[in-house]
Every structure is written in C-alpha cells, then in structure tokens.
Amino acid sequence: MVFPISVVRAAQGQPLMVELKNGETYNGNLVNSDHFMNVHLRDVICTSKDGEKFWKMMECFIRGVNIKYIRIPPEILGKMKEDNFNRQRGRIQGNRFKGQFKKPNPK
Image 1 (cartoon, one colour):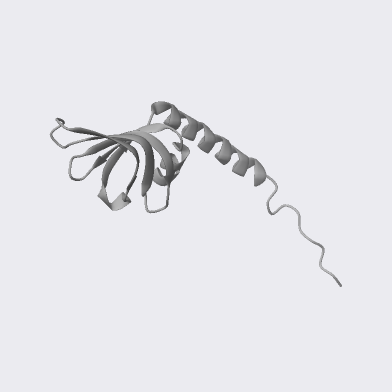
Image 2 (cartoon, helix red, strand yellow):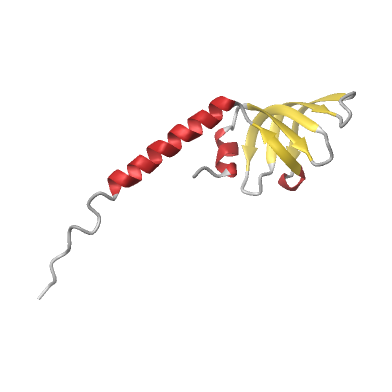
C-alpha cells in the first residue's frame, strides 16, 4: 500500500503542480514536505484562478489544508510502485523462518 504522503516525499526535488481549493495553481520544484502535507516549492510560477495572471516567485510555502490536489510526474509513481514491491518482497523473505526456531528452556 502506498500512502499519498510517501508519494509526495518521493517527489522531492522534482517538478510538480499544486492546485489550491481557491483555484490558484503553483508549478515548481518540491523542496520539502511534512506529515501535514505542507509543501515548500522553489522556482514557482503561480497562476490565478481565471488563468489570466501569472506571478514568478523564488520560493513559496503552501499549507496542506489549502491543497485541492497535487500532480506528480508519472515516473515518480512508477518508482514508488517498484520500491513498494521490493519492500513487500523483503518482508516476505524476512518472515520465512519466523516462529520455526525456539530458544531452549533453561532448567
């Protein structure tokens, strides 16, 4: 299972687009994110709700509560699926002998 926060964290350093609940969009490179889904973007272009005004910013911070959705490059999602598969395979292999070996009881 892949959680949205882990997908956003995997996109660190990658370009993405964030749309806010008020209709504005922010395109930029993800610098950092936290468990509240707050994001810090760099080299940002902000587009107004009507799409007629544009602002260029060096960086911005967006609170997660204001985010409507985040568009992440497809290669990041592919990487997440591969990492998740490898992690699950490792768990299965790691649990192969679980419970088969018991410590001798001291007498």
